[in-house]
Length: 405
Image 1 (cartoon, helix red, strand yellow):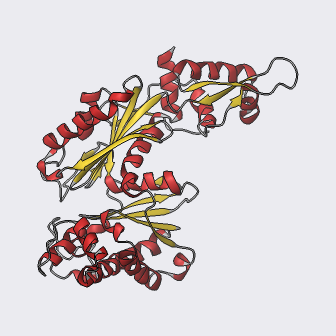
Image 2 (tube, rainbow, N blue to C red):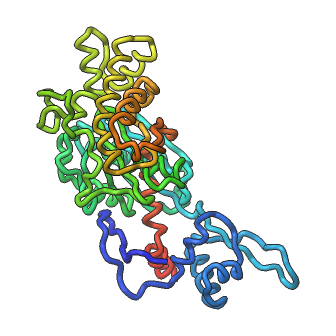
Image 3 (cartoon, rainbow, N blue to C red):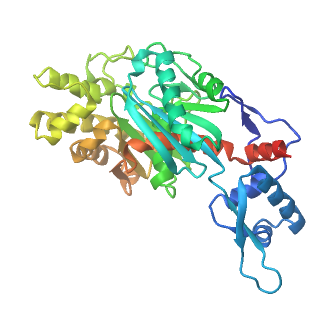
């Protein structure tokens, strides 16, 4: 089993792991992550390792707290063998999903199960200090019942471009004052634990994939809310591109965009005409009391013909951009999430109409375009999963085992 020799510093930046710390326990641990209890003999049979080697590695994992005794297996003669299982309750993880107008936080175990969660309206435009101060307060309140467990790490999704290597937002159009801010460092200093930061749509894609589509290798999640973006999963892994900017569909020019100004500084972007903010503005200009994506959805559900027509048109505009993405990336599933996705078929019908008509027939032969199943939880689950996958990687487990000696 291969793994990358990387660890995460307190700032959240990935750096090479120190040499000489590999124990092999991290590789063995991956077999136990499915939650099934196994004996030493079963682990030896699965890995081909000597029984003495397996015993030493299991003992090291027991000392780290990541593995626990799961009772005795049925005896086939002689003393019953002991079984061992991944202890997902050994530590907790904090996931934070920050949108343009909200903050959602969740505490999960090491298997990604949500233990506690909270959300509130929060304007990202207030700037990093006031927003993160509030996030820290919410996080401490949420973590209080779990303070007896070690906090393994923090994952954060931000509503703008994030340079993955540094975890810093870069020129985010809807996040004034956040450019280059060290979000990971600020939270790591508060909690004394590694923090990983990514674009909010990437973490939503991770959460949706983890929760409902683990057997799907190629998936796109499109978030349609105040802004528009996508997270791309290929071969089962998130694809961020060279700098972390992959999937930014919202700033692709669309045929119907014309000279409509976008917050990024360009004109004619998809986000400028099809986002929740754009639709709310269009409805306000027609006399409706509408300030947010939720208001647009509420009007559509309440029977507003104009809101329904705008949602269907937005779906078509999104479909124009997605039809190219489908031909380029050939996903098996496109998940539509975000606040406007709550409008259901009003939005999805427009997306499907254009994608199935415009994309290559081979690319759409088995393509499914579906609403998010995780809903508002997708981001916080994905943020937590991002951390879990890092801290439970073979290299990180080896480092933990070495530190526990």
